Each structure stands twice: as structure tokens, then as C-alpha cells.
Image (tube, rainbow, N blue to C red):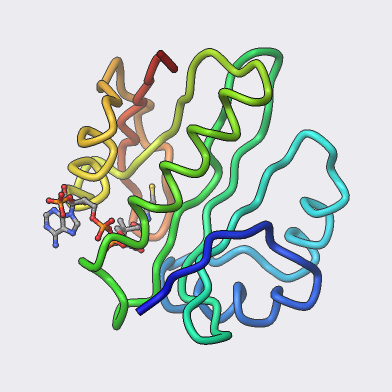
Length: 147
Ligand SMILES: CC(C)(COP(=O)(O)OP(=O)(O)OC[C@H]1O[C@@H](n2cnc3c(N)ncnc32)[C@H](O)[C@@H]1OP(=O)(O)O)[C@@H](O)C(=O)NCCC(=O)NCCS
């Protein structure tokens, strides 16, 4: 099984939207991704298996910080290391783009994602109360220093 990690292109967006719908209660719409692909400070990487997009990850460069916007993997391809490959690629992107720290928000109840981020050295540094809708929930703010 060969998973390829590569930049997201415009013609991947229908597959990315499908992943969004399967993974989030408030999925981003296609035009949000279209704007992201035009933003020079946004980085979008996807995981492809046998020609199919099975996961993706996004990040914004804000001065010297990398703000992760989303990470999602299709349910039937989870626990196979796909998100790990995406994060490892994004860490390389940071190293090449003079980004010194990475940060993200994650639902307090999303233990799977929190474990994934901790595996890569992210640490919880605070809470944004009632940050998420549907259902209403606090966000944990996490940071990681790029070594
Ligand atoms: C979170 C998510 C992206 C993980 O994707 P994945 O490809 O299954 O993750 P990986 O297989 O690379 O696993 C990486 C690590 O995550 C943790 N992890 C993954 N699945 C887990 C589970 N079911 N229970 C506990 N920890 C888990 C483990 O630490 C794992 O590392 P290990 O295999 O060395 O133990 C995926 O579950 C997903 O798309 N969830 C829905 C969307 C979402 O919540 N995104 C995050 C928003 S902030």
C-alpha cells in the first residue's frame, strides 16, 4: 500500500468536500477551499491511495507560526498512520518556510486527535471556552515548537 502525500489541487476539492462531510458536523464548503488554494500563506496537503484522496491537512502561515486549520482522514482509512504522514509532511513544510511553532484548536472531547497531536510533541496550553458549535464545546489550544 503506497500512500502519497502531495499538495492539494483544485480538482481534488470534490473529494476533500466529501471527507469534510464525513468528518465534521459543520463541514467547510467548496468555495472556502477554493479561496484557501489562492492564499499564498495557506498550505494544503493530501494523502492519496491508488488515485483516491483519503485525507488532508491544512495550515496557515501567520508570521513565524503555523496555524493548523484542519486534519481529517476518511473513517475507513483511520488508524493506518495517514494523519501521522500528513503531520510529518507539515512539519517539513514548517522547517522549509521559517515557521518556528505550530498551533491548533481541538474539541476537548476529541481524545483521538489530542493523542495524535501529543505524539508529535504538541502540548495543551489553554482553553477557548465554547469555541465550537454543534455541539457547543470548549477548544483545547495546543502548541508545538519546531526543533
Ligand atoms: C484524528 C484523525 C485525523 C486521526 O487520523 P488517523 O489517520 O487515524 O491517525 P493515525 O493513524 O496517523 O494515528 C496517529 C496517532 O493518533 C492516535 N490515535 C489514532 N486513532 C486513535 C484512536 N482510535 N484512539 C486513540 N488514539 C488514536 C494515536 O496516538 C496514533 O498514534 P499511534 O498509532 O502511534 O498510537 C482521524 O481520527 C479523523 O479524521 N478524525 C475526524 C476529524 C478530526 O477529529 N480531526 C481533528 C480535528 S482538530
